[in-house]
Length: 117
Image 1: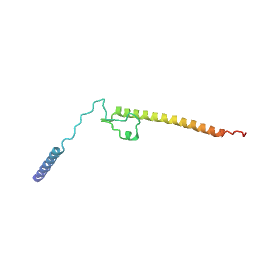
Image 2: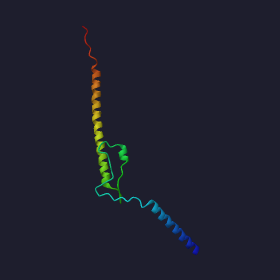
Image 3: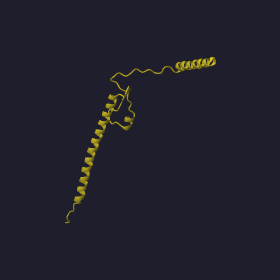
Image 4: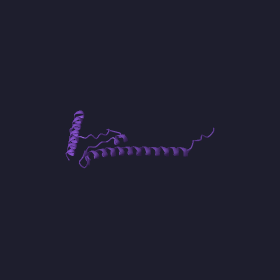
């Protein structure tokens, strides 16, 4: 029984020494202050959001998941960018259709024949 207690004491002493050495060598780590309530680490470019920007998004974690206001902001920005891009696509499709109709009309009219003199 005494040898088991001595063994336990030695193991605890070695663990304490290793812990203290690791604390001295590596330190406590960098302590960052929490962000103010209205600040966020979430970043998106001002214009032309790309897939890599969305993949790189990081949100603060709170007790019940991600901070909802940050996620809502990011989704609003992405939705706005998608709406703008779809609007551009619609304009370009209309222009392409009009150009195609003009080309078809020009083909239907054919070359103008001039009567020989």
